[in-house]
Length: 317
Image (cartoon, rainbow, N blue to C red; front, side, top):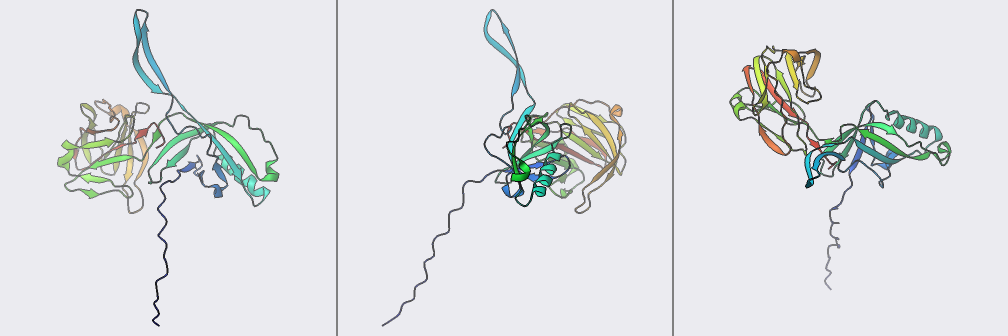
């Protein structure tokens, strides 16, 4: 009788998961990083009740008249954002271990220093919010945490700047060929002939104010958006970099000693000197939300012009 051998049954592979959670991290003012979505780390969010991920509140300006129905909308501005974390601190090893962990986490909570709250989506995109400690609502301990080695807290933080920010968007122009210039995220040097066609995209929900960096050698330069131009009528010599921040809360021009990036070592800006008063025309303009906007840049010399914006978002994803 013939014997037939059959391959063993192989069940189909399980389907790839369709649903993933977000990664939540807190980077304290002291540089420590806490994964608040990983319970094994000993400090984690209790998911129900987290506040600050969605839209900020807005203050509106309106005008009305007793003789006309309705009102006229005049504008709105986002209020400071309140953040609330229900979280647990626990440590099974020992009482002293719990005390050390609790102390280390609460060291990052400072009413005068900012930490960074970051939400990372499953695809790897992330947005962050600068927060400082506000209060713990007069926390009352229901049991002895030294004995039980865990405690739950309600932590209130304040984001004075209410918008979430994403990774910097940057463009660099110089020379006669397109080359990779900086380590890390892709930065490119574009041909000098493309300065007339220079553009940058703002993927955010809010207008973003560019920061311009002019790296010498340059005897004169102009940078701007459309007809709004900042003139730099003085020399930026080789080995120097002028950083012009157009944010309305800053609006400065600072000259630095400049050391270019080298391999894994990032560029270094040192010994700042305020040159704001030396600027010529200074007509600042933002990059509108969700738009490509043509830039107005020129340079006399063989230096480098870099435009950088930080996209701002109303929500954490």
